[in-house]
Every structure is written in C-alpha cells, then in structure tokens.
Length: 290
Image (cartoon, rainbow, N blue to C red; front, side, top):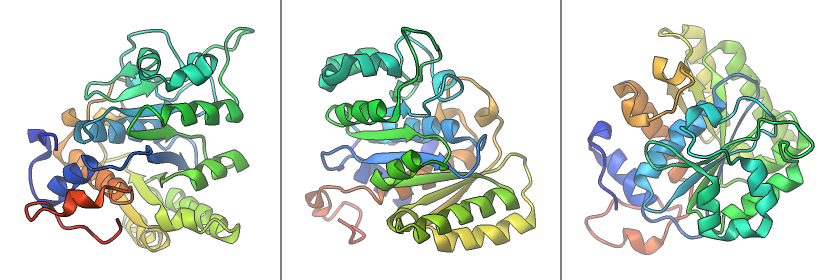
C-alpha cells in the first residue's frame, strides 16, 4: 500500500480507501463520468478524482477525454508535455496496447495521473474520434492501466447510456441546485424504465456547489437522489476547482479534499479487489462485496 499523503489525514475511511486501491483486481475497472446537464464540472471531477486515485493506486491510472468534441474536456486540467491527443491513440490502434506507446501519448498530472486529452482540431488529418473508435481506444488502454476514468458527454444519447451501462462505476455529476439534482433524478428514473436499473443501482451522484452557500431546498432534493442512487456526495465550493489550470487534489481546501476522498472511497468500494488482500488481521474489514 502506498503512503497516504499528509493532506488527506488519517482514519479508517482513508486507510480503507488506500488499502482497497492497492488491491484492485486485474481487468481495469471503468469509472464513467457523465451528467444530465452540461457545464456541471464533469471534466474537473474526472481529473480531481483521478488525481486522488493516482495517489492511492500503486499502478498507473488513466483518465480519457471521451467527450468526442473539439473543445473543453481535460486539456486545460493537465500540463501538456506533448501535442499527443486521443486522435493519436486512434491512429495507434492495437499498438496502444503496448505500455510504452500508451505512456508516450498521455500527459501526466501532478499526482501521476495519466491523461489522454481530447483532439481540438477539425481538419482533414485530425478530428475527435467517433464512438466506435473511442471504444477501441478504451479497450486497448484497459490492457495497460490498472484503473481508467472516462470523461463522457452528457447522458442524452444511446452511446453515452451504453458507456454508463458498460462501466464498473457510473458517476453522475450535478450542480448543487434544485433543478440540477432533479434532472439527475429524472435521468436515473429514465434509465430504470429503459431496463438499465444496474446503472442507478451502482451510480455515485456527485453534487458540486457553485457558491459558498447551498439552499435548504437543495438538501431536501439531495435526499431523494441519495435514495435513487448507490451513493451521493456533495463537493463544496472551491475556487481551485473553478480555475482552468492543472489540478492537484492535494492543493484543494480541506473540505474539498475530504469530499473527494468520499467520492473516491465510494468508487473503490464498488471495484473488485483481491479477497486475499483482506485476510490479514491488520487490514480493514471487507464489506462483503468482494
């Protein structure tokens, strides 16, 4: 198990997160981040959560811009060491399954998170990938990395629903407003009605505050969302999340670090781990899911 950075303190919850993160089974679980609405902070959560998990998981963790668009996404949340993008990963095809090739195409965040940024050009030579191309890229990366996070588009298309259904842990992001959380509730209800109840049954809803204070009405509708999904965590307002700069979760406020730890723990609790990792008397108890 890796050493827990001092910024994340101590305690059973953090220790359990680090222990389980060190014990992930092979097969590369997929954490798919989407939302009912646009502009809610999917990309910043993907990088913040991925950056924290990269501290806990001993093997490399990758975050992929799977938004299929030529703007936004992950590129402003990580320092670029090369011009490589997801389009280069598409061009690499099966060669991407080589760890060296995959490493050359990814950027590296402050905590070691590997980031495959989106393609920002629309030319005859370069473009954002299609869904079939993106699914191919993800398949190759899963043979290289221990854990993968996907920054998906909003959940208003069949392909995004397919990706959420394919995921090990679906993460749905919402603004901390009554409308925002209600839209997430409607999305969960629609997925149940469409025969995809396994998605809300596994989903972690993350409500991101956009101001220091959150209305009482939001807290009430959050309770409904908590009942409709597997878990719900609110991330408090933090200016560090609003800046379009490379994101280091260790530099966020104490309250934000604590909330991200809760999100990471909810995610890792739903990922398969090696049962033998919990056979020792000094390790955290298994919750019976393994």
